[in-house]
Image (cartoon, rainbow, N blue to C red; front, side, top):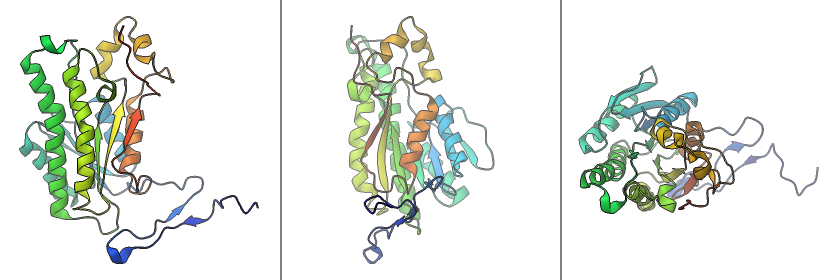
Length: 289
């Protein structure tokens, strides 16, 4: 064997720093089928769980062996590992109740996916947009995200970090609208852009509660969901939305869910925080004309 090549059977380990309260050596055995998410037995809260991406998120966490507190306005089908909780992300008390349900049922909440959001279908320039529309989007997408994160961090402060060193994970679902802007949906783009500032702030706060805690952001591009169906059905829409993409295809909810699972994993993304993962086929911007 060429000694310069890594031995795939070797167990990688890092410096042990248990005496300082930091996590000890990582134990990964790299090889076929050995990259595990270690999400089995974990508890995840997912908001917006009844929507297209939300449904995929719930199914993905369950498939990894996690239990899910599924928050939504309409409710979802419950099972032995899925608890459906109805509530409104605009109401801080509802978000505290959502987290409390997870702690009551499973003892703690390990992962929180801030997924709930709205995207008004009607194209409207800001000067012609109603105050009611602006307020609803801001209160749902931005304040709702803050109330959800606030409740999650409060629950983490109450339960404390896990003894096994698997850090808590807070994941925001943003949008490429927050990266490139979106004409006719300025209020939506603004709320999604603001999530980056929130994420970058909270990555430095969560570690005060859990030294291994992480906060990250997933930014999907156009994704085939019920919320986007009407817009994508318009003549020429498919060509227009994929024009600046290297992969001229639309994302599926499962593509977004897979990215979230990666960030949620206390092993695969152990040393990733304050990062943004864009799930948009290599999108480079928006077409204007």
